[in-house]
Amino acid sequence: MSDSTALILLAAGGSLRLGRPKQLLEYQGQTLLRRAAETALASRCRPVVVVLGAESERCREALRGLPVSIVVNSEWKEGMSTSIRLGISTLENSPSRISAAILCVCDQPLLTPDILNALCEKYAATGLPMAAAEYAGDLGVPALFSADLFDKLKSLSGSDGARRLLRENPAAVASVPFPGGERDVDTPADSARLSEEGQ
Image (tube, rainbow, N blue to C red):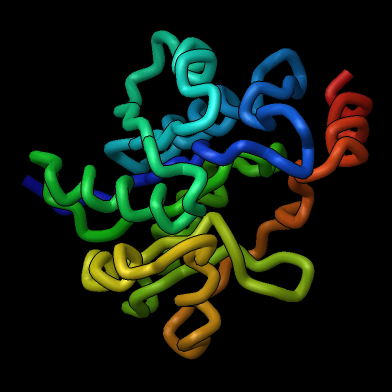
């Protein structure tokens, strides 16, 4: 059995600033959640684990028919770290031999399978323990982490996300350009822009 790079799609948040679940916003005729899951499945990453939380039943319906593993984070209100921890624990209990995992979010509509594959290729080529998307002068998600870092990811707490690890040791991070990676959906203005662009 060869080692594989898994992908964890973090989609549990309550979208408090937006006022409604961003996972279910539509862009080009698809919910952001389904679009992100299909992008993940079109990459070389396997398995694909989706972590749900807020509106989990409606989100599960949006993923109907897709070959992803769905887990529900009952502690999603405690912050993103709880979803990362659940996703990593799910991989550790997987029958697959996982050598690395990409952490991904559902509200980057310009994400493509090529960017996810480029993270895998950069990780393999450099031997560094992390690879991350670069946009707006910073490193962020999607980001790939070696299995050697899974314990550190599980030790995150509260609202801490994986960016903390990227910033703690930037020399250990390979970067992949992601034009438009900063385009996410956090506010009603972001949602309105998304709706206009998706027509």
